[in-house]
Length: 330
Image (cartoon, rainbow, N blue to C red):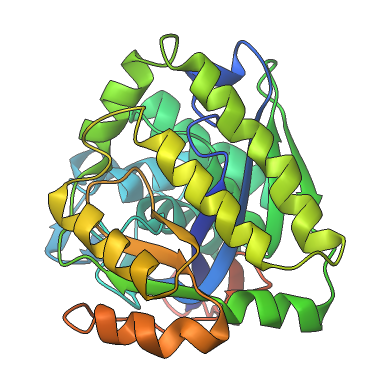
């Protein structure tokens, strides 16, 4: 039995510049972090040649081509695992429409677990690259690259997406103590809405050329945000940058926010939050807020009708947490 643990994520600034329509023309940048909420993938050998898949439904099939779960199907094809396995996926939170990068964490976790099942140890770069190939190139999802990379690498990272398709990964150089202080100023609240990111991202992708100047300004915020974290400035400036990014992102597409989310955000700002963003493509899922410690109880009171998700920043990317494979049957 193999078990992989792959983190979910929140991104801070630069989102949208990881879409191919942007980085094909000039470098895109995103700064994001893994969090201690996970997708677990369990791969277990069977005594027969059937394929069992357990997620929100159960599939029992004889051939990979028959698998309806597209991520499982393509992960098995990529890794060369063809039969005689049972695959189960579990999540710490309901994954559909959360905005925390769950589908990319699923595919990275699947690849990691299936390679480990075959006895292969692969790099984070390969996991991220192959996850992007599956989601973007094979399945044609209108998404960017940031989620797959932060799921594979973990930590607090800057990603640079180059026109030749390569990706540069840089650590944010921050002490463990400062990381904890910064992380303690970030709150997550569920908006009570979920959405399919593909609908929003299709429009953003279509309007990339029209919105290029806005996206360039959002990309350039990565450098300032990173400098705030690395150079000992007041972390409150990070909250202000998030608010500036919030105002910019509203100009990209009118589906990114809505009346309910705007009301929720303004309640938080009036209670002491300095900035925030809707996680993921927008339109629902989780609202992330930067709130100084002394204002957090006021913000919680203002958003008392919304469920908070406590979390911490996660230093690790996808990893194998259990590995015992005994070939009794074959």
